[in-house]
Amino acid sequence: MTPPALRSGTGAPAELFFEDLVPGLTVDLGTVAVDGDEMRAFARRFDPQWYHVDPELAEASRHGGVIASGFYTVSLFMRAYVDHLLSRAAADASPGLEELRWLAPVRAGDRLAVRVDVIGARPSSARPGLGTVILTGTMLRLGPDNRPEQEVLRTRFRGWFALRPVETDTEPEPSSAEPTDAAPPSAEPAGTEPAVTEPAEAGPQQAGPPHAGPPHAGPVQVRPSEQTTQAEQHA
Image 1 (cartoon, helix red, strand yellow):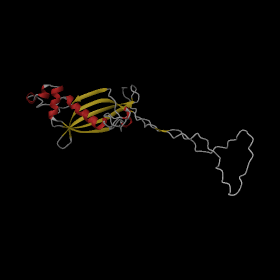
Image 2 (cartoon, one colour; image 1 turned 45 degrees about the vertical axis):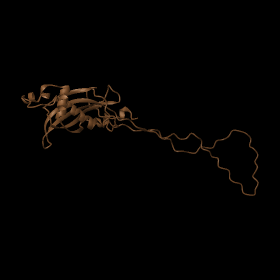
Image 3 (cartoon, helix red, strand yellow; image 1 turned 90 degrees about the vertical axis):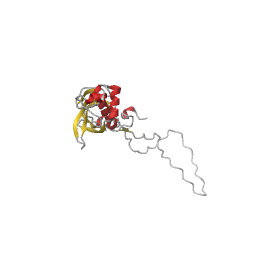
Image 4 (cartoon, helix red, strand yellow; image 1 turned 60 degrees about the vertical axis):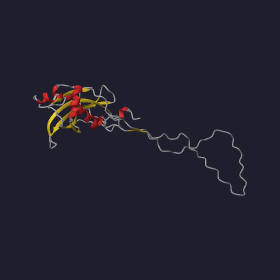
């Protein structure tokens, strides 16, 4: 079974670790389309304010129609983040959200480009074996030509990610059995009597010198890659 530290946020084997999430890295999280039925169903269940659920009142207001709950919009961001990054990375929990801003209304039919940028990373002092990564997430409304028109969401948050495991390769120990110098007895020529020898007087036996063998190599340590240590608040 794959250890938890080697699994991604969705339980698959991880291919990205803390050391891979270096400051300056941008990860494209794809494009999401806002489904009107899902948007209104979310609002009726979790945020039933009139400008999210009542088309007539919303149409007559300064909003000009129903707009998405901000929490629905950030849920779209979270799904893209899981699908395109956490599903590959050795992600643990998150110690918290530092900023969440809704910069423009989101409506049914909008197409939103999503990305995250790594702005800080350092080994966690609170969670041994994990590193804390600071990320910013953005969502931008795309126009008919697929060019960004307006930023609709911005967030800054922290995530914990497992450090890359240290691998070791160990060579097998040489055999402890002593090599022998004894040679197999040669065959006597046909038609001759075997030579008879007197038994030797009992005494200590002298062991012949052992064969020289290859020197034993110790375990080879594979060092982890250099970790980024940009300053940040301890998680």
